[in-house]
Amino acid sequence: MRKRLIARIALAACAALLAAGCGPVSAALHDPHDLPALAQDARVHYEATAKGYAEALAKLLPGAMARVEAEQGGPLAKPFVVAAYLDDDAYAAGNGLGSPKPRGVTYFDRVAMSPTLWREEPEYLEADLVHELSHEHLWGHLSAVDYFQIPVWFVEGLAVTVSNGGGAQRVSIEEAEREIAEGHVIETPDVAYFFGNLGLKPPPRVENEDQRLRVHMAYRQAGQFVSFLRAQNRQGFKSLLDRLTTGERFKPAFEASFGTSVEAMRERFLTAARASAS
Ligand SMILES: [Zn+2]
Image (tube, rainbow, N blue to C red; front, side, top):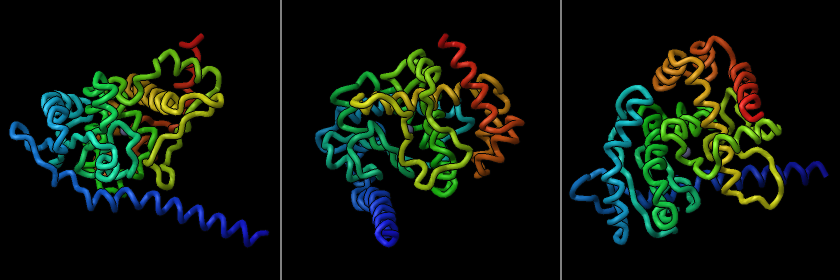
């Protein structure tokens, strides 16, 4: 019995490793740098059929970069490319995650934007581009090891905050506060999970609910917590970003910047959210 359990755990670990490995391997073979680049902005690459998408991204890019640089304290540190895809398989193959589902994926120096975003939700394009560039800002300053030591709720919450809701558009602040008041809250640990930044786990909720809505709920709550931290202590927030972009570990950087723990700030945030919901 015990042997079987160990075998199952080993199999699950292998599957997780494989899932985490497929995206990067595929992305190495399908590098967006190899796609044609726009004449007007060589940072923007595109699949043959996605030139219009790429042109829309190129128009938004300077403003999106300026916003991230102003909000996250300094210039994007390294060159990067933005890639526009209209084919789901090509997008999944090149985005580093191996999945066509996210509307954007940032992986090292590549920002891949999804076919679905352009086809179905072009009104989210600007905010989602800013969201991805928030990640690119961190990638540009950090090694992969340093990047993945930052808890995913902070990475995503920062991107939602800086983009004014990018990635959380389907859930309002009020809806998020209501869920918090009901006790449905995302986890916000002060250390990263193993395979930490592969996704933000939504809070539990009723069965059969649209999974996309749950993801937006998670992102909205993360964004609200990060916005709360910034509003509570602007200087502390700036200090945290400065410390993180020089590779300091999240927990000591947070505690030195805010003078208290993530747990203590979380309690204050939850109290404020509950009060706002009532
Ligand atoms: Zn994100």
